[in-house]
Structures are given as C-alpha cells and as structure tokens.
Amino acid sequence: MLSWAVKSAAIAALLSTCGSYAFGVEVAEGYPTPRAMGLGGAFTAVANDESAFWTNPAGIARVRKARSRSHVHILKFPNLILGLNAESRSFYGAIQGSTSSGIADVIATSDISSAKPFYARAAASPVILFEADKNQPAGLGVFSNSIMHIYVDKDTPTDARVSAITDVGANFGYSYTNFSNRLSMGLTFRPTYRYAYEDTISSSELKSRTALIERIRKDSNRGLGLGADFGFLFTLADFWFPTVGIAIRNLPTGCVDDYLNPYTEVRQKICGTLYTGSKGNPEALSVIDPTDTRIGMSISPRVARDYGIRFSADIQNLYFGTGSSYYGLPGIDLAKMLHGGVEIFSGNPLERAPFAVQIGANQGFVTWGILMNTSVASIEFASYAVDVSNTLKRVEDRRYIASLSVML
Image (tube, rainbow, N blue to C red; front, top):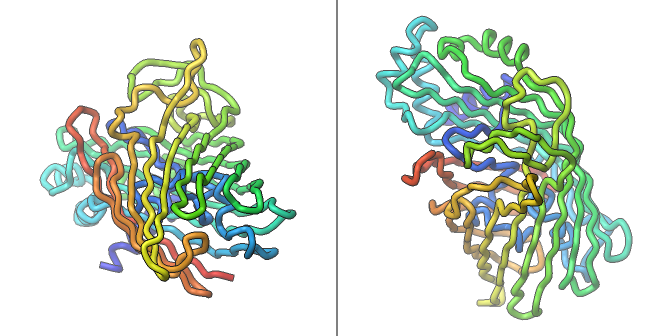
C-alpha cells in the first residue's frame, strides 16, 4: 500500500506538473490543507494557523494570542502535503498492467470509473510567521503546488483528458489586530509562476512518461501572475468566541474577455488573478484564477478546562457582477458553495492545539481529519470529497490529504 502511494505521488512530482481542470464542473480547489478540509473547508472564520495564507489573511494575527506573541510565532518546514483520490489505485494499476498499444483495451475493461478522474497532488510551503511591529503580525513563505487530473471515458478509451498544473511562488502576508485580538485584518501577495497543460491526448501516451513529458513541454501555458487576498475577522465576545470572517481571494489583477465559464457554458468576462505569458492553449481554464469571495462564522464554546469544541460554517465562491464583468464565476450550484464542520481540540482555543479531530461536510459529502502537534513536529491527515458531476445528480470523488512539518 505504501509503495503504491509513493509511486502515485511520484507520478505527479516527476511530471513536474499538476493542477485543477473542470472535469464535469468540479470547483477548483486552490491550495487545500488537511485541517481545513477535515472541517469541510469551512475555515474562513477560523484561520488560526499557517493555512491563513490560503483561506483568510486576517488569520495571520490569530496564530498566537496577542499577550503571548514573541518575535517568531511559528516556523514550519518543509510543510509537505501529499494527496490522492480513491480512484488513483485502480487507474495506476490499469496503466501499469498494459502495453502502450493495448492501453485503451485495458482501460475499457478495468474498474476505472468513467465519472471520476485520476487525482494526485504534491505540495510544499515552508513558512515563518512573526511580529513585524506591535500588534502587526506578518508572514513569509515559499510554495510549490502540483495537482494532476487524468480523465478517461470508457466510451472513448483511446482519449485521455489531462490537466497538469504546477504553481511555484512566494507568500508575503501582513495583518493588523488590536491587543485583544477581537478585530483583525490582513492582506497577502502571492507572485506565482504557473506551468500548465490542459488538453486531450491519446491514452497510449499515458504509458510513456517520456512521451507525456514531451507533449506537456511542447504545449503547456507558461505565465506569471500576482495573486492578492484580503481578509477580515471579528470576534463578537470573549467567552463563546463567536467570530465572523470575510475573505476575498484572488483580488482582480486582470480579466479574460471571452472566458468559457464551465458552469454556465457561456463566454463571459471573468476577473481575478491573471497569468500572462506564452499560451500553448489559450482556452485553458488556468489562464486565470477567478475572484472567490467567502463568508464564514465560527463559535468555540468552552466545554472543559483541557478540551474545547469549535463549530464553523462557510459559503464560498460568491461572485459580483459589474456591467459585463464578473468578479468570480456565476452558475456554481449552491450545494457546492456550502461548507461546515466541527472540531474537538485540546488546550487553549487561542493557541495551537496539541491534538484535534474534525468532522464536516464539503459540497454535501462527509469529511474528517486529525492533527497532532508537538514542540518539534506537526502531522495532519484528512479525508474529504468533491462533486465531480456535470448534472444535478452528484458524483462523489473521495480524496485523501496528509501533511508533515518540522517545527523550528
């Protein structure tokens, strides 16, 4: 089992590609982390760890309570993340058990689901959070995030739809908070180089890593983008800790005039983080990361001296339209926008928990997770699912994600 997992993750890393592609109408994941996904993705009003860089920048101020801040709040390395879906084992087995000429026949007779893609992810994001000035926490980090999807329809097993996107860049975050930590605001900047391939190839090319790498090298989009996110958190009271969070991810740095919205199947002017550079496929969805507005609420009642419980709920992928321009993607089904979760944790609710378990719902599917933090290491694991259907009937794609970090 371990050997298979390592090999599957290595496929994504060796191809030096990976990313999200709209198989059906799957909502783009961005940079999911295990704890957030264990909570069903409902992290906008929580965001009290390094995941704040990807969920709500205001949370940079919530990693450590104001009265216990020091020069360095947290330093994590390499902050490694690996992800696979349940479909990847049967897919990998079918590919390895075939010849290049007979791969279509093997796929047609295997137990690979026609409704689900192969999915693999490899990422790392070492990060440091520190105090820039009094009540002004900040953070710096670098990251690499590679996600691969491969989809083969058994009705046309000779063709494979491949999406392979790698993002490499840096994170710069700044947050302001008052001394009580009840109000905080944050802003992050994310210069990113994107290497992306999204197209249909012959399924026989899946057998040959050399041929696939050559195709990707020849036809990939290569571009630079500057992502920027804004976040706000306000805690209404001290005892029950009800918190409201707002995050606007991918503040608009550009627009694509004739973007084919996969949810409405209409060409629209979509704004967000624009990637400019060479385009082997100008129709690729990855030429822009649409603006994503999120609203969340969490509450953390104290149930015991050494343990607490946290409830959280989010609505994500909200959009705004101005004239013919859309900041975000219209047409996403409401069920795919709703997220919720419950976390039981040990220790102070305003500090990094030594141990926690999560359960939640992401797009209507059950999620769960677990984390363990010590003075020298952090381990997290989560199981979640996304809806990969292009009809009203939902199709569950179960995914697993794990992270490992050394605390320095």
